[in-house]
Picture 1 (cartoon, one colour):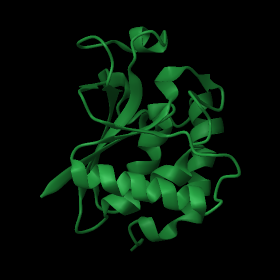
Picture 2 (picture 1 turned 45 degrees about the vertical axis):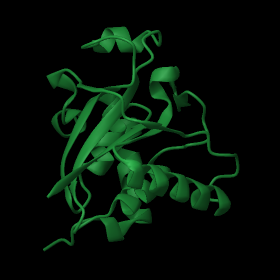
Picture 3 (picture 1 turned 90 degrees about the horizontal axis):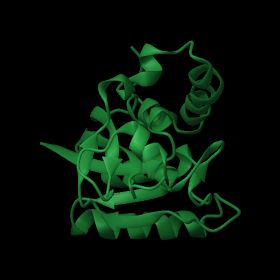
Picture 4 (picture 1 turned 90 degrees about the vertical axis):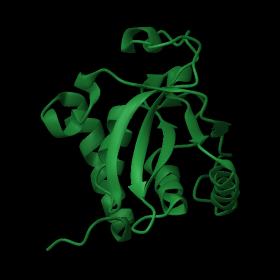
Length: 179
C-alpha cells in the first residue's frame, strides 16, 4: 500500500526531479502546503505573503524505500541550513520543511534531523521545520514533471541537472538498478 511523504526544499521543480527517480517512488506531485487560503495560485505563493511552502508530495512503496531513506535523501538533496531560501530562490515559500502525516513520521523526522545535524554533513545548524501537514493543494499542471518536460530550459540545465548528477553520484543505492 502506498504511503505519502511531504517535503519542502526550495523550488519544487528541483526537488521533484530528484525524488521522481528514486526506487519505490510511485509519484511526485508538486504543490503548496500549510498556508492561509484555499486553492492558492503560484503567483500568490510567490509573493511570500500566503504562508504556503512550495512542496512535493511523494507517494511511495515502503517495501521498496522507507520513510527514513526518503528523509536521508531530503537532507542531502538541498541545503537545510538556509533559512527561507535555496540558492537564488528567496522567501518563506522556499523554506526547508518536513510535513508529517502521522506520529510515526513525526518521530522519524525528528530522529533523522538530529542524526543529520550530529553527523556534520552540514557545517551550519539545520533550520528545517517539522510540522503536521495541515493541508496540501496541488500546483498548477504546468509545474508537474517540469524538469523532464523542459530539460533545455536554462534553470533546468544550469540548476536542476547538476543537482541530479551530484545526488545520483552520492546516493546510487537509492536508485533503481539499471538493466
